[in-house]
Length: 114
Image 1 (tube, helix red, strand yellow):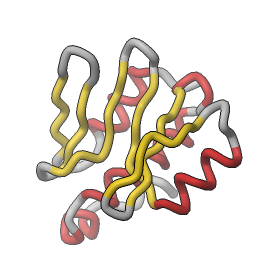
Image 2 (cartoon, rainbow, N blue to C red):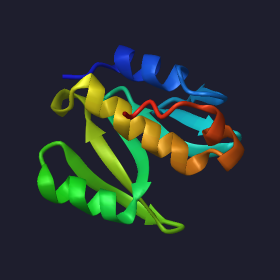
Image 3 (cartoon, rainbow, N blue to C red):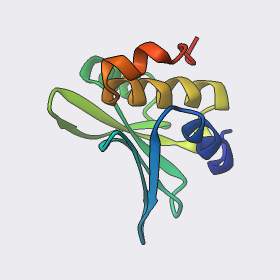
């Protein structure tokens, strides 16, 4: 089971992440582009993924992942922290960040998901 503390450690380890807190949720951005949200009340995180990854995650484990929305060719997934381990969460967060970060920034960062 992943915790919010682990989530923030994962997010903060990525390059050029800005984290902002609102009344209901925190928002994660890289160079102004949103790649994730965290809702403390429900201990869930919404992450940007490819459409195929969104569908695969939800189909495989609907008790852990649910479709949030689709936009701009991407599928956002709600992840229940209690249903994932920290390593899996790290992969999902890295992928969300990678899909939002500019290519030159991604090229400077080792692939943390491997």
